[in-house]
Image (cartoon, rainbow, N blue to C red; front, side, top):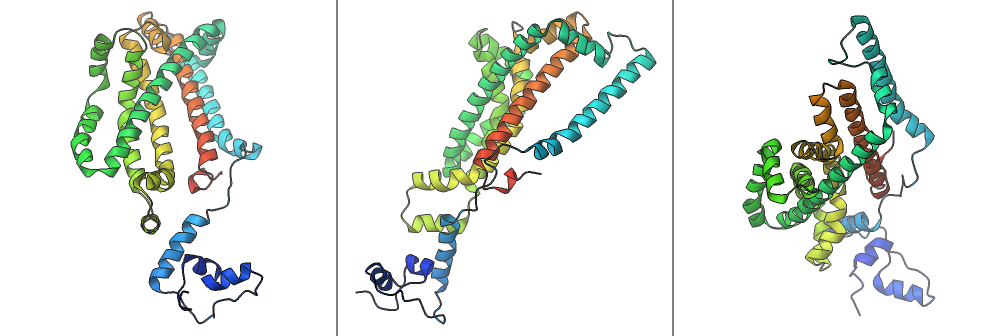
Amino acid sequence: MRPATATDVADLLDGIPGEAAAEAGAGVSLRRLPPQREASRDQADLLDATLYVAQPPPARGWALPSRRELLLTGAPPLAAALLLVLVWELWIRVREVPIYLAPAPSRVIETLSENPSRFIEAGSVSAQHALGGLLLGAGSAFLLGVLMAHSRIIERSIYPFAILVKVTPIVAVAPLIVIWFGFGVWPKFIVAALITFFPMLVNTITGLRTIDAATHDFFLALGASRWQVLWRLRLPSSLPYLFAGLRISIPLALIGAVIAEWIRADSGVGQMIVIAHGDFDTPTLFGAIIVLAVIGVAFTAALALLERRLLFWHDSSAGP
């Protein structure tokens, strides 16, 4: 039998010594620790870490945003956009700007409504290219970031090449990728992946290494393996950083997809821009820009909804 003065983690959590807890299960009255009895410093630290893991914050934000949240979030940018369009329309009409320089918003809307299927088809192709490149770039960056976060040698060996990919202009590499990988969808995927790779890599490494030291020590004290620490501590702690990297990577993926479509203009919004530029068709150019903006907003909104559902416990998911 243990000495009467010994306590364990369970004793610290419920205030009952181990033997007393066993007696309570047998129908004996519960016996609390005396109020003057204090845990040692090590036991207090262990208790803090245990409570941090065992008692997560209450869940919030699993439901879809309310009408009030949607109104507070969407009304200000919508009002600013309407004001900008109104000023733009008045400026074009008052100054009588030629259409080949800048079209009026009404003319752009007319172009979009004349042949909407053309813009929808081109936008869907570019969205597929951007999404494929985002998955390829973000996925490879995450896997490589996991290795680099656990090994300084791997980080020192690979990180300079990641910086080289970052600083190399993508417009200089895209023609080579088209020559090497042909004229299918893979050049678009690879170009979009290259431009999204570095932000996801940096955020993955930072997120996996930004963990609570006391909680990490508690996992090690319990004999957790490296895989268990990664899956149950490092990965949940890194989710805010991963979503931040994805928010940066979404517009970059669209840029990479359009650049690849410029180099090999066979489909997508990039092809539409190249043809409209050659014809000085500025209404179509602005229509293509609007299509890309809609795709970017849709992807960002979907990511925000996913982040709200997965990070309901984090302050970043709090509504307005």
